[in-house]
Image (tube, rainbow, N blue to C red):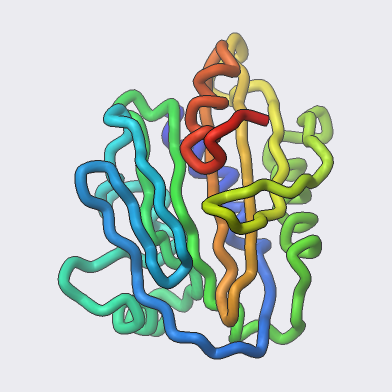
Length: 211
């Protein structure tokens, strides 16, 4: 049940991301080896803890974004997925805990097909609206802030609401976005827990510090 609810906000977010830029730089997909994720095209490198494992293709998250395909070029995978599934979203990496209480990943969007050029602030505003739509007006959302990730600036916000699957737990989330060329890079974190430290520990994967 937790995995189902974690995916609900991800689904809403995917429906609301928009954007476009003029640079047409070609990117390649990242790799995940022994919990070390690297994407040289986006200059990203993260080490994930051992309790987070790569989601399978049966994961709910993959229903709303392109799936990585082994031994296939990133661009080929992306174009094939867009054609077959009519989506411009791509999970470069997606991981979850075995109990389904934690989910995190790197979501890439091809924003070159959008009609209107966005700003990062526009994308963040859409994500904040998605959080309110899913969790209700009672959700607490921080003001957007700059987050340093591998020496690059992402615009981010965090939020907290009551867990839909367990009223005794809180539902924590973090979304961070950066635009590069024809792509937006979205870092997603969602955690069901009675302890905010569990959430902070996942966020720390990207920042080295907690917010």
